[in-house]
Amino acid sequence: MSASREKKARQEQAASGYVDPKTARAAEEKTKARRSNLLYAVLAVIFVAVAVITVVANSHVIDRNAKAYTVNGETFTAADVNYYYRNAYNTFVSSYSDYISYYFDTSKDLREQDCSMIDGTWFDYFAQQAFATIDEVSALAQKAKEENFDASEAEKAALASNYSYIDTYAALQGYTRAQYLAAVFGSTMTTKVFERNVRLVALAEAYRDAYLDSLTYSDADIQAAYDADPTAYQSADIEFIVFTYTADSEATDEEKAALLAQTKEKAESALARYEAGEAFDAVAEELEGTYYHQSHATRSVTSEMLTWAFDDARRSGDTTVVPYGENGYYAVVFHSRSRNDYHPVSVRHILVSDEDIANSVLEQYLAGEQTEDAFGALAAQYSSDSSASSGGLYEDIALGQMVEPFETWCFDSSRQSGDTGIVETEYGYHVMYFVGTNPLEYWKVDVRNDLRAADYNAWIGALTESIESEELSGMKYVG
Image 1 (tube, rainbow, N blue to C red):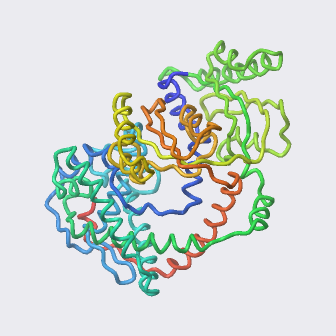
Image 2: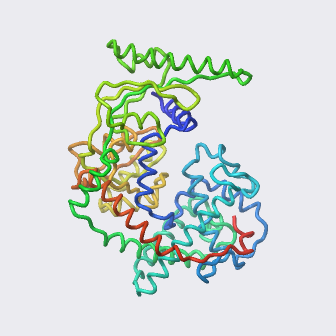
Image 3: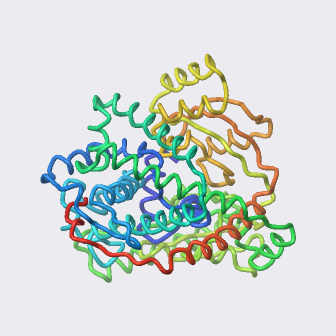
């Protein structure tokens, strides 16, 4: 399937309510980690710099010192809140850059655009995210101070890392450091405000990480958690074909219903031909459906197809036809389901637009120290992927999580720590660095993450439940 066709298929799936396993796994990992959207670097903002600058250019002169929010008596100015608000906004725009126009118009005031995610505007949505982050950061930082927790080295490292990214990308766009900060965080931002919040976040994250590192679990704990919900830590091997229809804008409900019925007939015909011995992918092509084979699909309560695949009654060779939202039907073949006994891997990568740049970056690495830190520094400098802010690092990659060429390189049985290479995918060229293989099987890593998430959620919930916060008039200068 071509890259453009794959992209179109993903858009159709998203519209139907289907949750792609890669997307679902990424979302679940974020939830498990419960790592707040705390900003160490602003690299992702590069992808939306034009939109951000447009907003700033249209802003009125604002008062950065206006009081905008308080948490347990601690005041955050409009400039402070903008640090978290703009981080939430820029992260969202970067994550959904291909489809951002479906959500809102980046050139217009978000206060005037209704949000599809909450009952309010898109300004309200990002303000709520900012407040949630501030609440958590404030609670963690306060607890750290009460316990005389020393995060001075973490604060210095955070500032150095941030300014390294900022100065690099400011230079690339012809900005001074101050101009770049204003472009990213709004015209209220100053280096003083920026550094104050970087230090606060660094303290909070260092304290949080120290707590997470203190959480340990025995083999018996891990086994008990697995036994309580085994399919959460298993993968299914399934093939499926998506059949959809396109109706004229003036089509009646009866005409649409007839077209939908035709997609169901195609799905039923596809399964009948498969059961008669024809190749499923060939059938898909002949019937003009979109074929997929997912050997490591993960459970999802929002997908009827995956709910069916993870039912305890499922047996190899089972088939079914299930709705594809209101736009068509799936024809599904179940092969197997098993515990995730493989070992996950960790890599760093640098995503660039063409092969010549990839070769140049790799040559630069090979001519240098050839260490993981050196590669991470190059990722921060050159990569267009959001992981660049963490040196291009992807930890504990699961099978089925990445696109096929990327995954194939990562899980090559001959792969050794320190290996490098270049991989081409639909997203561009990836300069690769292999960090290593986790000695734990993936299901154990997954269970441990769940246990840690549950314990952390309870802990942070206790820290934040008594928070008293108030939105103040200075919020009119945020955004």
